[in-house]
Amino acid sequence: MAPSQPLPIAMPDSLRRARSKRKPLRGALMRYQDRIAEVLGEARGQRVMIRSIHADGVERRTAVKWRNLVPLEEQLF
Image 1 (spheres, one colour):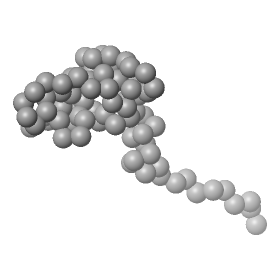
Image 2 (image 1 turned 60 degrees about the vertical axis):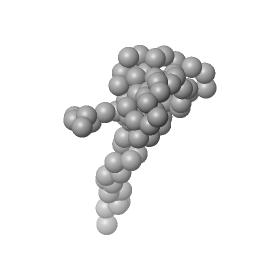
Image 3 (image 1 turned 60 degrees about the horizontal axis):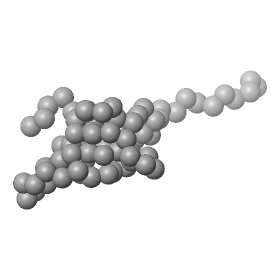
Image 4 (image 1 turned 30 degrees about the vertical axis):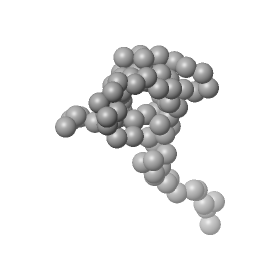
């Protein structure tokens, strides 16, 4: 009997996405929660500064963890 080899297992999409995700570049448009944000630059502790317009219509700058930013899809709306 030949020694058994481990079967190749497909990596789940969630892990594949997490591994391929990199820190966003300055000026990139990303999705943060329910809004679209522009990355302004790097902050401390794995965070980036973003600029977004909140539900009340006010533009705000916020420091968020970059792993919580999601790249925009092909279509904005």
